[in-house]
Length: 156
Length: 268
Image (cartoon, rainbow over all chains, first blue to last red; front, side, top):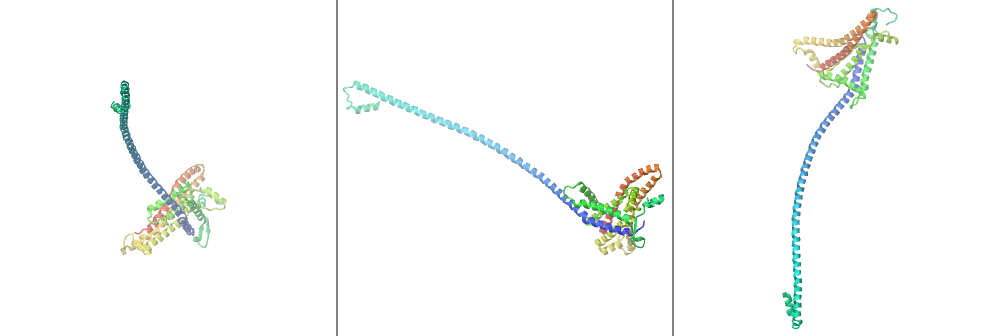
């Protein structure tokens, strides 16, 4: 156990080693570690944020689906109502149309009847006239009695 | 073994416990333990150089296994320092603690080199006396302890000012009363002397004793077959136990360094 100059040399070596570590070894690694810690913290925060956003989005999508269902059922109800209305309208229209056709047909029939009566009357008048003419061939001058004949025809 | 001398237990022991010296001036003080210096420098350069090499390519992304290992070591030191030292530890104290731990650990670990085989190897390159373990040389441990001691005084003066430090030497721990001043000074004197002594001798004693036990077991192996058998067995056992001592002593040395330096930063 003899103390000698080795002590001072070792102390110098120690000083150099400490300086080296303080200057070159410690700071870069600490920097790397701190950067990594920051990155990890940011990653965790981003994950948390993503989770929250997912929750919000799923909530929102649920809302949208519910609203869409609501609207679909509204539309269906409306469509059903409208369909019923259309059917009713169609029924009314059909009835009116039917009535109108009926009225038209009746009018036509009446007209036909009237025309047939007219024709019939004409023929009866003609026949009567012809009969009368045959009877009265001599006495009746067609020219002299034209006025009488015409009024008779109109009466028939 | 030193060639040409008769092999006795004394010569065996003294052969293994003699440093390679080199005189650089008149008087006993001006000698250098070349083996201690070179082994210390080598272990320091290799271990800190390794750290530097890894750290230089350090990424803040996913670390390689090598970087993860270094980070593990450094964060271990950092946590120890954090729990003791309350200040900007990154500026000096934590890296200094890292230096102390890594370097002392490596120097202690030289104890694992099998002494007689290494002696043969050194013999081959012409070195008759060569001690592999720098911390088994009291010069190394005193150098470290005294450096820490000087740093302690430096930080005392830096943090508290010279006046504040002297005030503390005179007035603590017992009180400001002038009657107590001599007692305070004496107390602090004892503390300032005992700190580097206990700091350095604890490490030196543990490692030196470990080396002696390896030597004794080696000597036992020279007594015959039974001695060789049990000597080998016990040597292996002691080497395994020594892993604990080597690490523990490096850790204790580092912790004391941190404690002393943080005490220098705190006023009473």
